[in-house]
Image (cartoon, rainbow, N blue to C red; front, side):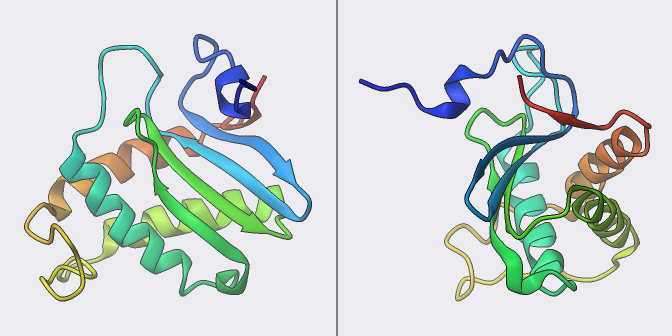
Length: 150
């Protein structure tokens, strides 16, 4: 069976940051790595779930909302996937930084936190989400935070 592209990336070399992991026509897949893979420190599901709700809502209301294909957590719990049509890497990085800051500044209910809107609405925690976003924003403020997967 043919290996999928993401299994061909050497996860031992990945550090927290943002990566272009593949380009399919006009769609770019970004890996938003909040943690080093296989390092024993993984995101808990409540945190991943809440970041998904918050980041997805903010980016789908941003200036690139019409180009957003998908945002969601990686099954390995080391980050998130972001798929963008007609992507500009510097713009995506800037918007990602801004959205993380917006989440940190947000003081209200978690978006989509009702039984009608979410299949597991009790598994959300804005405090955990903000801690994850603060740590990741710090990573993305470093000069070499943008990388291409090898």
